[in-house]
Length: 182
Ligand code: IMP
Ligand code: MG
Image 1 (cartoon, rainbow, N blue to C red):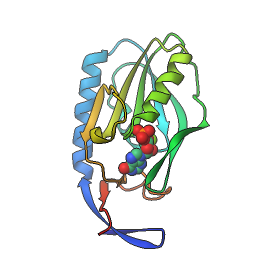
Image 2 (image 1 turned 120 degrees about the vertical axis):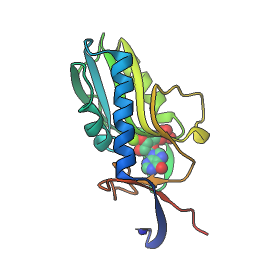
Image 3 (image 1 turned 90 degrees about the horizontal axis):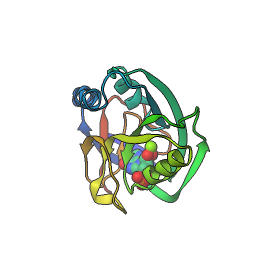
């Protein structure tokens, strides 16, 4: 398989199949239901654009009463982080005094998560838990606590299932890894 990026063909290979992702999501949902319980209301903050597919699948297994909010952040150009985070669309809704669960597609340097924690603390959320489908532990720049993780992966760029390469390929039902050019 290959994708086109900057007019170059790049090899990709499947890292997680559709079935592997769906099975893992059911397990994460069980973990969240067990630890947060089925009674206390929860505000879910979906980090757009990347987390929209993961969040849509995950929230359907959650048992507590939920409100769904979004925030749109951007830090990437092509396959590398620009190092600064732009808030394209601010947080929808009010989190003051509420328990929040952030749903993210992938954690790399951890900057986005730290940005979100600041944002949610400044809006006086009562508690904040983080759930990410993918985590690149070797790329964290500072200690970043994650409460629920789908899969730990290496440092290669990945696409599909919400994750994009310059806006493309988010619709793939599986996750593929871009092979570094030889
Ligand atoms: P961080 O702020 O460096 O942790 O980066 C997090 C954001 O960068 C994610 O929310 C993604 O939008 C993007 N990102 C990081 N790694 C990848 C990747 O391998 N594929 C696609 N997007 C990525
Ligand atoms: Mg993201």
